[in-house]
Image 1 (tube, each protein chain N blue to C red):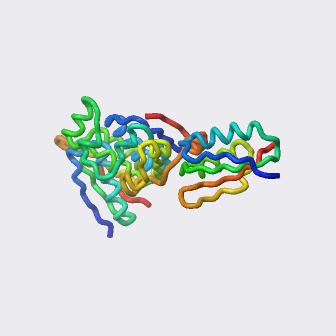
Image 2 (cartoon, each protein chain N blue to C red):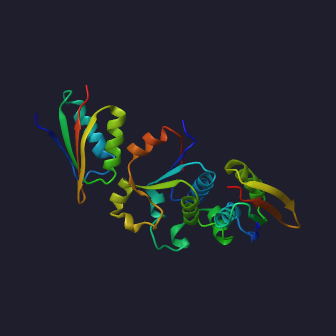
Image 3 (tube, chains in turn green, blue, cyan):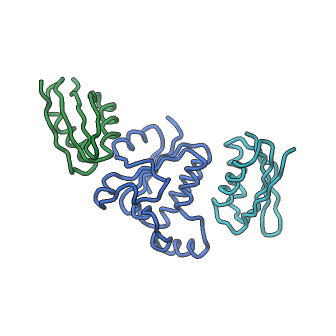
Length: 75
Length: 131
Length: 76
């Protein structure tokens, strides 16, 4: 299954998390969402967001000022 | 439920920044963990290299504090960090809209840029106040 | 042999005297005493309260003319 992509580059905190939440709500359980963001708070925020909502944070990485995440939508 | 204190500091008023500095430092040195999230006008007061007159804007109490050499707010936060468990976060949104990097802020004070998702979640374990 | 240091924090505003006490205690050995002179009334109650909380020993609080002397022994 391929990732759905959310390009959150340039979005100011807390928009990356809010947009991810919106996207995940429309996805089927088990589907994966890839998020690209430039907000430096996104790393901490997505870890906590996933912990609190039960979605699975599959990947979290940084390349310069670009942060990438992959989240699997929980049931 | 821990006794940790979470301070959400948004006001640019000297009096409020001073109070936040006093609370953060006293709580931290009393062995109470403290985290401060600095956003909005308050972030402007933490730019590095400013003289107190540029940094602090307030009303009647601000004038009296400056005239009487009350402890400097930035130094209070620094004392809290030096002698206790105090973490400070710079609001990522506020840094972004100002176009500031962390290096624009006072040195040795901030633990990094932060977001509300994490700050509010962590604060569920303790006591959250807004200044 | 324990040592005593005196910090003259008269004229300093709360929480200055407490912070100066803490900075001084940090540099001393267990058993040493630090005396803080303060003209700030708030510190006179805050310092004993802080000692109780973090478990240093507040030996005495003496009112002098126009100021207080608070004696603390580093207990840990």
